[in-house]
Length: 484
Ligand code: TNX
Image 1 (cartoon, rainbow, N blue to C red):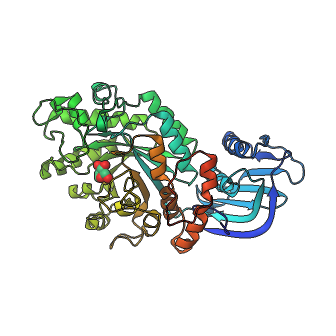
Image 2 (image 1 turned 180 degrees about the vertical axis):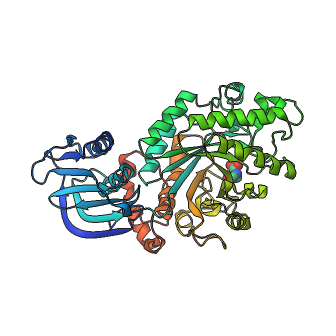
């Protein structure tokens, strides 16, 4: 039973109790003139048609009948920023207002959640909503097990409903290289073969990657590509043995250990490789970020690691992108030049050090947001090195106070991560993502003072209807009194 509106993330401001608006055969969507409002109205109409069965035509600039319009309007209101929106539902009309198209998109996601399973009555509300953080991310590892375009696009669709705006793709690791690179073709052709457990693996062609980027952009999601360097590189070394210290081709790796591989750092070949790959990835990616990994480089001599990162971050900068690295990158003393992704809850001091050095942070504390952790000890998927992560663990933390010395002023955002050593199917991805990702999405979007576990739990329960309508696999955590 839900007594509250089942909105997740909870909006910054909300008034309830107005008269509902009833969607019916006469309802039309009326976007402001312009290609993007019209496209967003079509996108919203398609969702609402599929759940309500109503015709819901999109009629830009039309004057609809009384009590029949869902309007999408661009207004001038600097306080809404790029992503903020207002949603007003009265008996007369539904209006989404925003200062930029991204805000219209988020208003539309809120509206979808107000009518989760084909309800035709939209509850009367007044919402005014802006996000706490600008980076609300989710990482998917397509290296340990490969997932292709259809799965990635469905994943983007599902997370965008929770106002996630960054999908970080982990594109290379010991078990596979998953992106075609023209200058170094064996990376994908040879390095793309295989995965954990020995399946066929695979890779994204450049065309497939571009398609994913475009699909994401239509949902206001930025793709952040990660090429993990200088460790986690066994698959690259299988393809190009001359990049390794031994210059001997290693065996393809199908296990789940970490920390055993490294590029040879002090070689011109490696420098050439790194420059070519990162430049190509940057060219292929319209978003402002390229992630260079840097985690668990346990087989790279410490001085080499520092030198490598000092050489590599400027390569990313010269290709016009902001470099992002896992928290270990602070060892290279780059100050503000790299955006630092905090993950290892055993070493919070690295996050504090990054902040002191002037870097900005993305908060991905494993004990809270690693969605590859088991829900509980007997859960059949995932790992438990950071402990089990149930819904309350994913929800009950504050990115601005979690680590001493790291507060809101240095945090750019929050990102959940799904590593796929044990994840082999799209249903596995979904059941690990739901319901924990919605919890993380609220951590990233909703002002801390507006968050409350019992309130969240009650709202989350209502999302079952939405997930069932979308055929999403999810885990009925015992921490939530789910609707049937
Ligand atoms: C640590 S988190 C890793 C990954 C593993 C993950 C498994 C991080 C930056 N590195 O290589 O897949 O743990 O939970």
